[in-house]
Image 1 (spheres, rainbow, N blue to C red):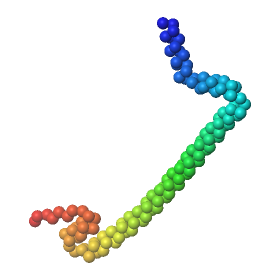
Image 2: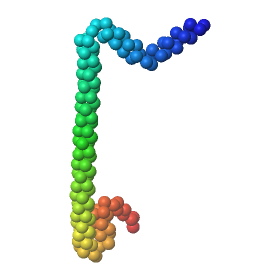
Image 3: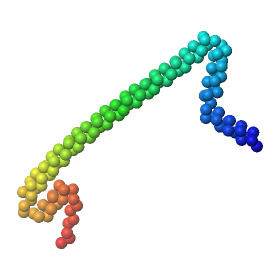
Image 4: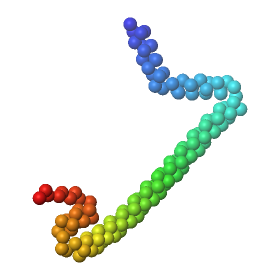
Length: 134
């Protein structure tokens, strides 16, 4: 029982701290192989660190560029929406003025006939005109 628990603990430690045995084996290998292989191993580690830092820098730059592009697109979108809203407001005002002018002209034309006046006003206002059965 003691050995089974012991080996489970060893296995758990190795899963979490696997790099320590690897470093120890590499150090033993470098001591046995000589100074030149130690220089090579540490050179490889330095290059790996440099490559990691370069990759992190590239990731940061691309993220910043994409954020800038998103911000530019968002501001352009907002400006375009504001422009469209302004044009819409102007068109609505022009349309209302035209309808008012047409309404005044219709009233002037049909002063004498109320049924004809009601029918024309309903047409201008896009309403439904119901004729009474007399």
